[in-house]
Length: 399
Ligand SMILES: *Cc1c(COP(=O)(O)O)cnc(C)c1O
Image 1: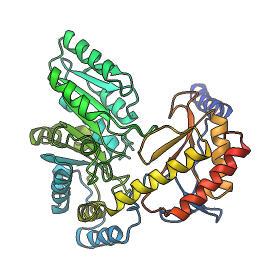
Image 2: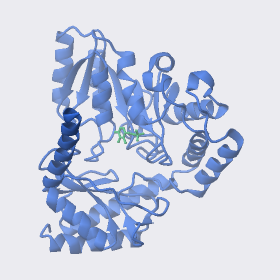
Image 3: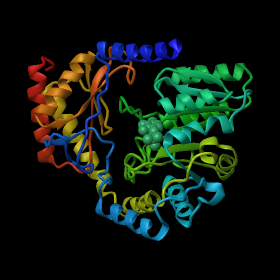
Image 4: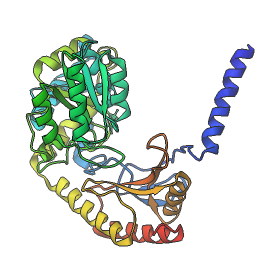
């Protein structure tokens, strides 16, 4: 018994040390659907600049209607994994539609992108193989790689010289197959992977190239296909993982898209696919409607692009330390975790909802506010947000 008590005491100590370090994350409660503005549980309406709702589809009437339709025609849940009795016509349709949208041969759905990455590497690579990973890759990629027995190599973020060095090292170590894997867009910095150069390097070394497109699918590239479209390498990426939980409606669900033999093997062996419930019909039906919208018009991604340009220019003009780029993720560097929290708090008082990011989500001393644009915002709303940033930034001595 004393051991169990000590266990709970040590958990409380750890929580206290997280609070003492200013790193405790509080969850804000929202009482409305996701939107350009949301109401918090204390009744205040605020401009929302922190959702992954890039295209504004999370509460789009057509998407909601499609979810209702699927709920009526296909039920609430399937109470099964895919291979027992959890595959409906809708699932097959969405997989085919995603493949067409991404320019791949086949696609397999997962309960989340975290699961897609978690079930990828272990299934495809063995101890004789190598996986080479960008230093800033998402936690789900890191965990997925950990689950595999492949030898691990890491290159400096977006550094092509170091990627070459690691490819060289993997070859020297006698790797059978080598897979280079990267976020298409990096969620904390908004940097875009150099997929054209990476493809050329991988070809030189006979390596496979995979990307996680969670912050890209639906809006990167002229038709919103993703980072591979933005970098001119559609059809040349071996493996694409992604989420339905961000730009594509924002509910939940993930996928892996690749050559058909790769997807076929994932269906046989990938553990999160085999041992976790199928994606709910309402989400699948709504996701098909999302692809209808995106294939019908580029209006939403075009508006997102305009909003991003407008807001980045406004922040530059105010004098904030902003990480350069053109992605709707806009990191405003504050460096100090406490100060980042203060800025977020002050902005909330001024009617703008943003979140401070600090260790362990970003490296120590790299605290920031991450602003995210949405196609839902209009210029007047964004200008109001910029005014609030100006006031809070001056008060805190950041500009
Ligand atoms: C959000 C995110 C994930 C996880 O997506 P879910 O579908 O919510 O599990 C994985 N990879 C990256 C790069 C992400 O940004």
